[in-house]
Length: 458
Image (cartoon, rainbow, N blue to C red; front, side, top):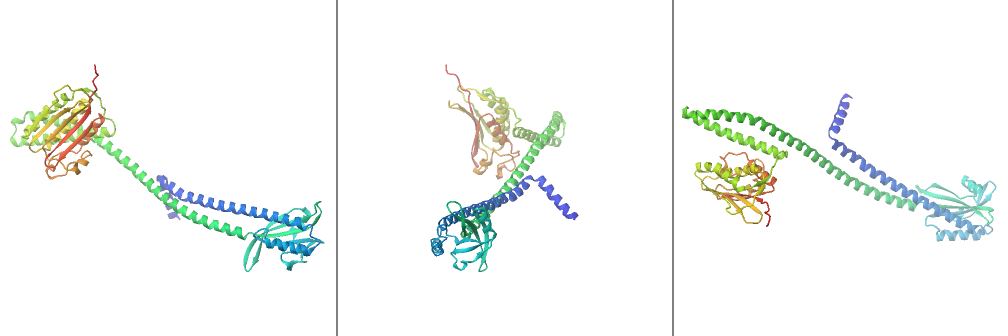
């Protein structure tokens, strides 16, 4: 017993924690139940309506027979012939018997009948007496058994009276419900088939809906995990930034005295400095990713001459290219260039990322920076290199987080896989766009395009 209670409690807790499962179970029970109730209600209503209609027809037939029988009660032979003709012509397709009776003491004697074997029989039934004394039509459903088969009949008893209202006798008509029952049975069978098909379809839809609930639950959990990931990255990045900055500060103090240290220690200091730079870049990239995803990165656009920013970045990074033995060239637009409405600091970060990547992924050859303005309201800054390039498959995934080019030459080049994602996000946040063209083993060209501020015509 305790085991059963524990099982029930566990199921209740499961349903409480997973309300979508409870809703699915409720639908599985409720929807078929509604369909069953609707089918039963419709079939029963139809059966009741058909019974009522058949009863009205039987009462009408009784009234017609009673009307012409009042003039023929004195001539049983002619009355019998009239009844036979009536049944042969079938006032109603389901009419089983027509009987004319006259009072005989407290009972009633059959004067004429479609079943001639009943003529002169005495009928003591209560409904005859009720119809006679109430001077009203009495109708009731009765059952008969013939050849081991049960048949339902409407028994209608109607008084026969003169035009002045004097009672003369009774008319009994038996009308079978067999045809109506057969039609009702056919409708019931068809309704059950439709019901089964509908329940099957509903169950399939509910099962699919349950899967959708599961997907929604999974999506909700993924959102929670993603939020936890963002929070972790944000917290970890902030926590890492302080010790990294402190380590760089201490290392810079050591570097001031580096000349008096042994060559082996100087080499270790250089390696430590490079590792700290990579760690600092990673921390900064993670911070930027966190701020962008949480929409906390502010953009402060001001009219900017992009040649100034590009020139400063070029001067800062040209030394790195020259150390690798690369040729690096800058070709600014020399004509009148309208300003661009951008955030200078964010644009500088874009250019640093693009130019750093160009230098990093170019083993030999040239890196070239161009500013192009064709008086079409757009200004483009391109960074072209003769580096390792990339395949079409790499270009499709290039701007996704943590993606790095998958080829042999890029294997030993360090990086986080976040720089180009950040570059694309910053470019689009300033209403710009970034384009890439590349051929593997030939080189790449990255281009950022922004709209210039329209100049007022004099």
